[in-house]
Amino acid sequence: EAGVAQSPRYKIIEKRQSVAFWCNPISGHATLYWYQQILGQGPKLLIQFQNNGVVDDSQLPKDRFSAERLKGVDSTLKIQPAKLEDSAVYLCASSLGTSGGRQYFGAGTRLSVL
Amino acid sequence: QQQVKQSPQSLIVQKGGISIINCAYENTAFDYFPWYQQFPGKGPALLIAIRPDVSEKKEGRFTISFNKSAKQFSLHIMDSQPGDSATYFCAASRGSGNTGKLIFGQGTTLQVKP
Image (cartoon, rainbow over all chains, first blue to last red; front, side, top):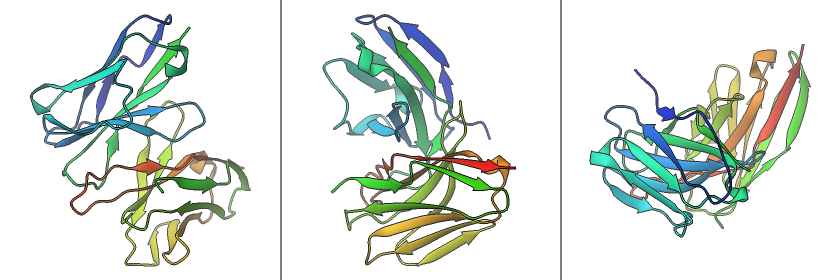
């Protein structure tokens, strides 16, 4: 079974630039999550999709972050414009069901904002 | 109420020893408590999980002890091996009809010395 795929693995940008991350979840998984993991901290949920719809985006900085899930499969997370404090690893995860349970994580995208 | 507090921040154990990591939570509605293991450059991977209807769960060398009245749970790694050196995160969520959003602890970096 293929895991959660993320790209790119690394990205370096200057502040005020824009950046996008891509995630392909495990086939058949209904729920997709984007987490932000700042160095030395646990992952923090940014947004959660169930199929096409958003079920939780309470911690997404909506003035600069946006996300979409295309046809209930792939997802992109965008930051525009980036700030220094956005430097982190952005993790994508997926789960089979729609009310919790085991989440499978991708390797993440490490973003450095200079 | 949404926090999960994890300790210690770092831990050094000799090969063959017991590693113990503790977590505490406040929200009594949490009903799923997983532990994730993360190696450098990788995403977190589920290690073991427990629900509050049992006080202990064991899988190989890994055991979760759960104390519902104290709102605490811990991970015990028996016969710790150098390959166990990683960062460990506890987490908590509300399933059963809710979104299953995971709240992570801050993480514990474990080093097992040969």
